[in-house]
Length: 281
Ligand SMILES: CCC/C=C/C(=O)SCCNC(=O)CCNC(=O)[C@H](O)C(C)(C)COP(=O)([O-])OP(=O)([O-])OC[C@H]1O[C@@H](n2cnc3c(N)ncnc32)[C@H](O)[C@@H]1OP(=O)([O-])[O-]
Image: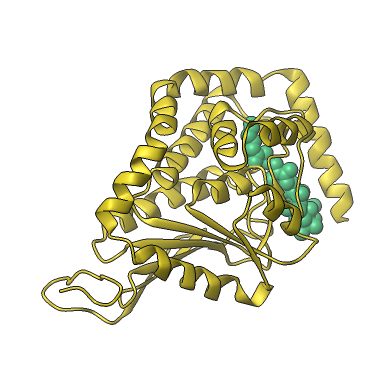
């Protein structure tokens, strides 16, 4: 009952169809022949992660997780030149404490689903990927970035006067090591694809038009390993980080809400937003 990619039989027959579902900000194309879903973020102009996008992201992943035909997800962007600009700064500015709490909880939820997924997750980074965009990429099993020196990736939070929480830091440390993370996070560094490859922040840099095809080829390699063995290994590697957030989830929300509500932090974010708008005009 297994195809060459190990696709399970569903409803008694192997289906050879592409299925699509689309929300406002996320579209998913599921290929039943390969067991691979391509999940695209589509929130112009820069795929900034607002509450709705984060919620749709978590729901879409959950749907794929329970879909027995789906073994892997390629995460990418429908917007040229931008993977994701990270958290939507307007969600963290001028709102009330309840809103900040709800927003942070949605971010945690999305991350627990993505980082904790049983599926093979591959980030096809087809554009810039700062802060929360980098978090998405680093939470996947494998990262392929488009070779364009205008694109950058990294956790640049300190440049905005804000601080990446412990769970961003933990997975960055697991990816590039303690010393590189310390320097990178303190300085809020953004790396070109070549530099990101050098420090191991991405696994491969390929021509822009080869990002998706490379992701499919890498997926086939990961599918060659029996699912149960790969999944148990992934869980063994990632469980401590997942447990740490689950255990400290409420404290993490409280911490974010009190930090982001400070006048000085609100001022920093406003100045950063004005700078972004000036640059764009
Ligand atoms: C608490 C700790 C955790 C925090 C984690 C985070 O992720 S913090 C987030 C850290 N993230 C960053 O530091 C990334 C900041 N963004 C950038 O560096 C660049 O936008 C870019 C390189 C992603 C794209 O460059 P480009 O030249 O292609 O595009 P452009 O620059 O011309 O922008 C177009 C429009 O989008 C707007 N807008 C942009 N980003 C955001 C946002 N995150 N949110 C909201 N809005 C945003 C921008 O103002 C402009 O609006 P306008 O004027 O049309 O009304």
